[in-house]
Every structure is written in structure tokens, then in C-alpha cells.
Image (cartoon, rainbow, N blue to C red; front, top):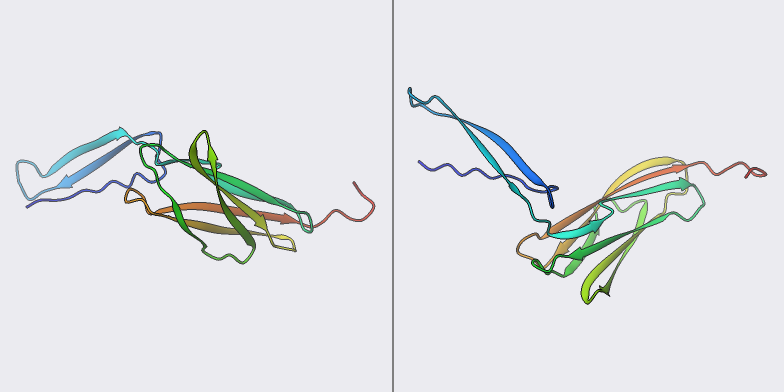
Length: 151
């Protein structure tokens, strides 16, 4: 019979991937076969930064912008955006031209008004058959405001 082996290349864009696979069989001559899968993974898009960090004091404006540029070989449009939780963030997606090609700017803003940490993920849906979802992780760390009279 045939066996299909899938390798998840998510997060490996622009890097090399090497995975080892052990196959166990009922063949007494070959009970165990070791396979190796390797290759260079092309990135689907340039995403900078890959992680949004919203770090600052409560009451201060805290925001960050992620730039998403589709590679020429894999053109796509972002057709929807959704936050998994969305409780502590506001976000806005804008499309602009950079060097003649489409680029997307995702601006993420902190809404948390008190001390604490949070994690969220913004999921971008594309019209590409190569990759339908792009996930942008968001990390928030909000500290108490500085006491009055201090700098």
C-alpha cells in the first residue's frame, strides 16, 4: 500500500528544512527504514516583524505596524482580517504600493488600560491557493503608569 507523508513547512520560509522519518514495517528483512526529507523553503511573503510586541505603560499610546509584501511568484490579496480574541487590541489593514507592487500595512494598537499581559493572534485570509491564512501573533505587556511627579 501507499503511504503519504506530509511535512508542515509553516514558519520555515526563506530557510532550509530537514526532517527525519522512521517507517516501521512488517517485513522481517526491513523492520525499520529511516527516511530523510530536506529542501529550501521559499517564503510566500515578506512579513516584518513576524511578531507584534505592544509594550508600555497604561494610558500611553502603544502601537506597532507589520508590513506584509507578497512575493512576485505568489501574488495575493488579503480579503479578510480577524482577531482570535480581539479584547485588548484594535487593528487596521491598509493596502499601499511599494516599488510598484502591493504591500499591506497592519497597524495594531493596545486597548488595555490596566497592568497585565495578553496574547492574541490576528488571522489574515488571502485569495491565494498557496496559502489561505497568515497568522500574526500579538504580545501585550502593559505596566502601571509612572507615579505623578516622576520622569
